Length: 197
Image (cartoon, rainbow, N blue to C red; front, side, top):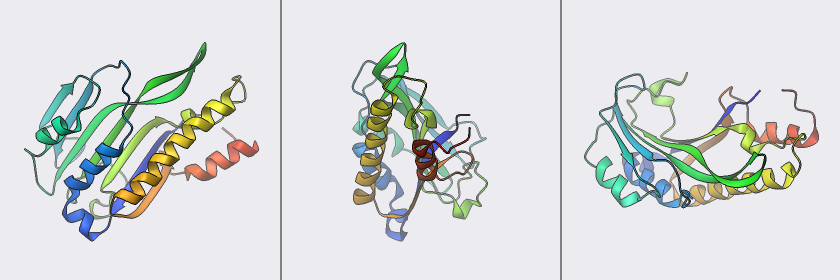
């Protein structure tokens, strides 16, 4: 069974007061794909994730962070969220292994925005990266070459997480699956052959 994988970041007090600036740093550090790709999208929402977007704008890739920030700076408020859906490169198997643009979503949440998680609004993360299915980062014994390619994907993920730790005003971060499992534990179980799907 596949599960969605995300990185949640809670900023410290200084980071929260300038959340959009922290989001810009995240966007500038993120390794967006430079390969031919479908369009990216910027979205701005108010109040909660079930409300209709205030803005939804398609962008041709590769991502231009300056263009994104010019749009996002037009919207502010404690109950506003920003989302950039785009692409980054991961090894994927489709008849053979290839480095392929893979969907990713990067979000920034105001403290009064309800992002739809089970947490109370005041306890929700400030920044989140949704990486898609966790199978991109778990070895698959039935695929030849899986170990090496998945290891490369995991290294890309961990390198990016550590770069964000150094650049952002991080107080807490969690890399977890949609079901709430700690991804590091799940990866360790997969590597040892004890994870039951």
